[in-house]
Length: 395
Image (tube, rainbow, N blue to C red; front, side, top):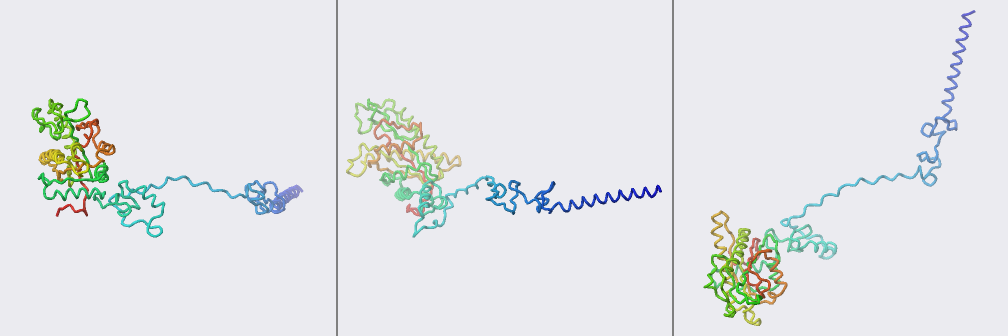
């Protein structure tokens, strides 16, 4: 009796457990798809019962679009790309690497306006850049080492050819007459690697009482040791004997000559490997023939040549000294007379040009208050660039 009761209870419990399991199983399988989005259901777990709603972060295909639910259906805008450093600009084309062809032409045979403007902006800066060549920018793109300025090459070639037969002889030293444009081609281009310019300014040491004009000796000596004693001091031919006072002239001469010597020594050392050295002697326009004659007076030619010769004597002395120190001077030197009868030698622009070339603070014997004193000088030009294409009279 007891055993039968025990078995009955066990069977009942098993049936209850099975029934509960079947109910739970039935509820689980029927909940998703029963048309109701019940507890624990979502669009992710049961899209059939839970189609989603606007604002749930999903653009549901059942009735949602950009118009009905922009919060869920507006396409996401990708973030802007992270900023990056701009690529490094290409290295500038060296002057020696001139382009071999002109840039593509616009129209018949000329570049477009933007290209032309860019070319104009660059041409003349001393560097042969992309888009520049010997045809559209000859000032920057001459062959490597060639003197860039055409006017400069022609003037130098003229001097060298004229002196080919021997400028050591005074009768063969040419007189070079140049225009203002040519003068600027010679002297305005400071800093050109192939051209060096130096002014040796010779001053006047005997002044009128008003201190505004020179009445006496022109200090054309380039070496202090060559300055004459006071007793041998000669006044200029235009001076008034009563106003000419040579006392202390040798001391003044040595002062100015020392300044000239220092500047010439430094210049020769800097340009000792140049091809040519031009020594252009000048004299004051005062005393020249009448302007209508078109030339310098013989007295001024002689004085200009004496000045150039004195600088040449200093250069020759340096040749020997530097040879001993194994630093030979390679250039050929030519002394010539620069015809300064032209009007521009008296102009403020000319004086400004010369003053800009002078070493600041260097006492070269130049007194600005003196009319034409800036012309009393030897203008030295060292030519290290190539004159190929010009007739220099050399074989």
